[in-house]
Each structure stands twice: as C-alpha cells, then as structure tokens.
Length: 308
Image 1: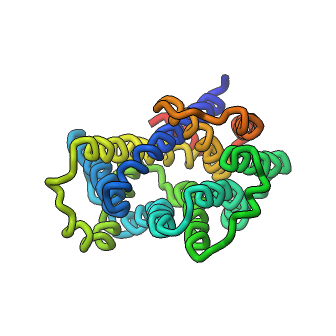
Image 2: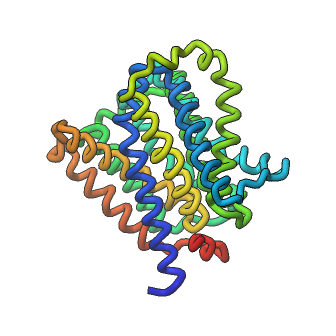
C-alpha cells in the first residue's frame, strides 16, 4: 500500500470509528433527554469535552490562545454541528423520530451538492449513484422495508426546521476542510469545542440556573460522561481529521451506516432487530460504503498532516 493510500485508509477508519461512537450516543442520548433538558445535556457534553482538551494541551504546555481571527475561524467550524443539535432538539418537540431519521438521510446528498457549489468540484456519476443508493438503503432500514411509508412524511414547520439543521450538518465537513490551516488537530478540536461551549452558554444560561445539579443521578452523569468523552471529544477529533483528508460527500456518506449500527446497538442491549425487514436496506448501505471507500479522494497536500 502506498503512503497516500495508507493515509486514506486511516482517514476512512477514523470516520468509521466516529460513526460507531455517534451510533452509541442515540440510545444513551434518548435516555438522558427523557430526564433532562436536551439543551442542558448538549451544553454539558460540549463543556466537558472542551475541558478534556484544555487539560490535555495544558499538560503538554501547548495551550496557546489563538488570535481573534483564528477564534472566528474556529467559531465558523463549530457552527454547523451546533446549529444541527439546536434545530434537532427544538424540532423533536413535535417531529417524530421516524421523520427525523428519514430527513437525516439527505445529509450526504446535500453535502455533495454544497461541495459542487462551494468548492467547485464536480461529483462523478459513480459517486452520485452511490449517494442515491445509500439514501434509498437507509430509508429501507428506517421504514422497515416499506418505502411506501415515505409518502407519510410531510414538511411541517418542525420538519422544515430540522431539515435546515440537516443542511447545516451537511456543511460541517466542507467548513472543516475549507478553514483548516495546518494546525494540530488537538488544538483545532480544543478551540472549536471552546467556541461552541461559549455560544451554548449564552443560549442556555437561564436553563442552567434552573437545574438542580445535585439531584442528577450517577447513571445520568455517566451517560453525559460518555457523550462528552466519546461522542463529542473523541468523535470531533476523528471527524475533523477525516474531513481534511476525504471528500465531504465521503465523510457524510458514513451517515448511512448509522441506522445499521443503531440496530446492532439495540440488539446488544436486548432488543429484537427486524433484520428480515431491513435486509435489502442493509445490503444497499454496505454496497454504498464499499463504493465510497474505493472511490478516489482528493486530499491535496494536507493528507500528510493526518500522521500528526
């Protein structure tokens, strides 16, 4: 395997691990938001994740305050995921989980179209077919093999808000790739999380003051600890590395694996997974991912930075 192919394989592996960590956050996040304000949970996960990187950099004596221009750049990088989570939590008050899952499958396709418009890079026919195939496969899983259920999806105000959140999430790998300037990924992730935490604090301050923090049980703290350490700190670190090396639509395409991984997580937790109903969908997603992994990626001279 050549040096560039090795780094490409590592990048795909990191995005795959990111996807696995995010998949486990669904059942954990569902349990947490049933007991706590979702925006408060999001604030805690961002704050704890940022503190992890602050301690890491401080221990290495590499915690350096960025310039105001760099802080603006890190804030821009943090905005897509932050906007997505806010839109999701607001929309889920009225939007069903089924509608949200179906709308989220549009993220890779939106990312590909945005990449064409912003980065002026055409999408190959093979990549376009794979994106559509993955979208259909994911929909087959979500709707348990019956695509006729797609007709029941309506663009209510809540669904439109969530769809805007999906557009923001689709821009995530594009902004990381566009505004990365060769700094350490630990430094990049740290200050991205800090900027997001500051913005969240401004939004959630009244709710934070209303929470009885001493009444939160140990299992809830452990759940938030997982979200902070693995589904935020580690996953953001992996995502940003993968976004620099791979095409935006390749990174976003791993979204299609989330329904499969969630089914596996549910089965490990004791639930019965409807594999007979979703078999064709799982097969379609796996074929899509095979095409995505084998497709040539444009990483430019920054590929070598993944070795850091």
